[in-house]
Image (cartoon, rainbow, N blue to C red; front, side):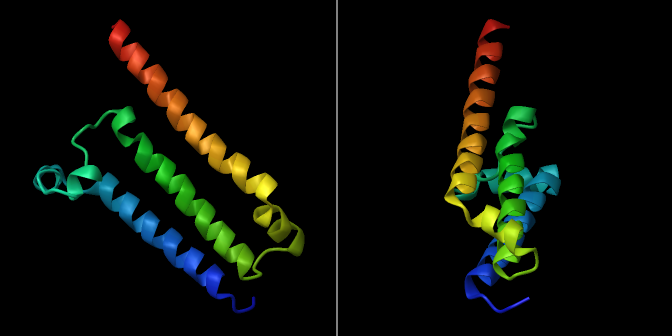
Length: 117
């Protein structure tokens, strides 16, 4: 493992995102209700306990894990071939596009299902 400032930033960013997402998932309902009333926090804290209400948290969790793996690759923890795959734009762009498309398709289908029932 070698020192790489960007790799360390990715690791910290990933762990902060994981801490944020897990706190949103496991926060007690009474605290969640209070936080939802505060302007700014209401964007992150949702009182919607359906799958659609939590999907963005799951996507953030996947993105956080990817950030940690990317940071570890930048620090040289994995083989050079894996590092090259993670660093390729031909891998990163489709990964981000897939996450975005998954959210778009999921919310379009869930809204259509909601309006038909």
